[in-house]
Amino acid sequence: MTVDAQYRLFNLVNNPPPGSKIEAAKLYGVDLTLNLRRLALTPTERVREMEGALRFMEELRRATRQSDVVNR
Amino acid sequence: MTNFEAALRVLAEAGVNFIVVGAYAAVAQGSGNTTQDLDICYERTAQNMQRLVAALAPYHPRLRGAPEGLPFLFDHLTLSQGMNFTLQTDLGDIDLLGDLSGLGQFLEVARDAVLIPLFGGSYRMASLDAIIRSKRAAGRAKDLNALPELEALKQLRDSEKE
Image (tube, rainbow over all chains, first blue to last red):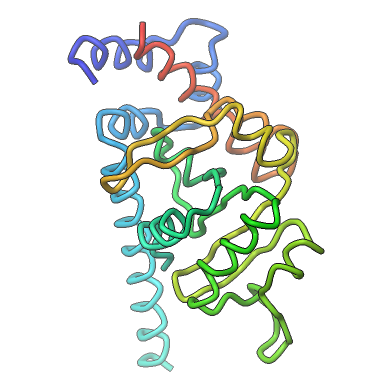
């Protein structure tokens, strides 16, 4: 993504046109800055980042299970 | 955890005609969500279903969530007699969808698919428009909850091109 486009999208997210889907998503509680960041990545980087989040959640679940056993 | 890269490579190398749909396709196009499974829409021709079976059979596909020992034969006949299958495989969770809510079957989905460069190759994926149509048509709470982000993402991507 070009720097110009990054600025344009950043402005759109921070000052969404009234009645736009961007405004609706913000009002719904969506954090669109995550999308801005992901849009600046390549598709491979995007899915790798998601896989990293999944691995972290799996690790957390494993740690919670172990902690349950220790504290029983 | 699903090995998305390996699953996609295995399907592509076997010459399977498929389109990545659902949340994984949305993530590749900039969605901030996560998903644990790979959803693909597959072409329901005899040749393609045979290729699909040949590609996934070495990874022991079984019905996800089914009791241990429940007989399930993953072959061309099973695929042709069913439509959508939620599978657990050695590569992870893979959903085979012959028909998608709001989109239809492979040829309809293919009409609106986009080619996304991924892992050094490129894969056909449902466009954001198509994913939005499908989620809206599915109408379940989790699908409707995903709509505000997807619709805003679509607007952002359109603005990116201006």
